[in-house]
Structures are given as structure tokens and as C-alpha cells.
Length: 77
Image (cartoon, rainbow, N blue to C red; front, side, top):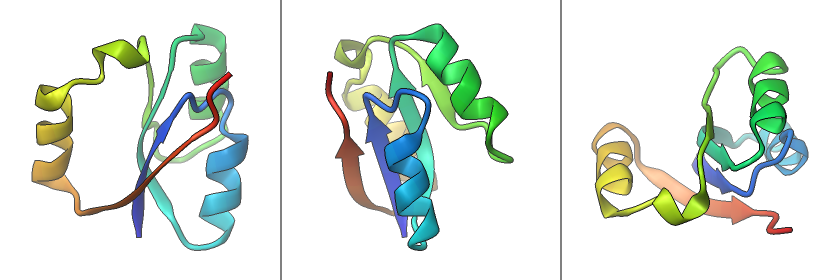
């Protein structure tokens, strides 16, 4: 099952989901160092450093062209 992680931070919430069979296809956080850590700790470098307000219909449409998304998770600050 595939997920999108908003406000991902370093990926703690994603990690818990990964342990239970989910695959993050994109993780978004505004904090550059958190995304660097997120990507460092994973084989698939899906972390993107961007403001969540930039996550728009165009980006979502491109993600949906490549993946069937089963859920969206997030740990807002």
C-alpha cells in the first residue's frame, strides 16, 4: 500500500507505517535538514523539501499518474 507523508520531518511516522507494510511515495517537509535525514535513512529517496502550501493539484496529479495512493499521513507541527 502506498502513502503520501505531509509534514514528514525526519520520517518517524513514515517509519512506523513502513514497518506495517506501507510504502511512502513522497514525503514533504519545509525543513531542509529533516528531509536530508529522511532521505539518508532510506533506500528510496522520496523526501522533498518544500512548503506544504506548494503541494497542489498539479503535483498530486503527477503522483497519481505513477502510483495508486492508499492514504495520506501527516504529523503537522
